[in-house]
Length: 165
Image (tube, rainbow, N blue to C red; front, side, top):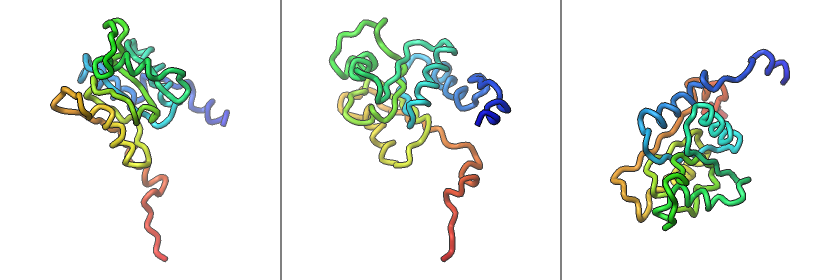
């Protein structure tokens, strides 16, 4: 493992094409909108928050299973749908979350969902979208972006290999 790390060198988020695409979505395509980013793993969520900080993208928050009070962050991200009196300075524009927020939360102040990595069960994507596409949503259109694995990954892991018996 150490040999692998030594051969690869220091990780640079500025060379991470997937993160660069995310950054473009956040700063160029939807620079002023609330965005909910779902990821499968807490480590990935922490990585994204760290990289967004380095890229000077503010008003972000992170919710994983280890957060003591996710509801307070939900209120700051989606105050209208949760009937909270939050000042603009307290509001969160970008909420990064694991599937801990895929059920039971009102997040319809947002209309953009990004699936940074895909869950194995398709129902998770529906649950994620259901956090914003619900009664009280004022937007006429909900946008769901999903990052797909790089070309060739499926071939490498033989996910769809058909074997004759």
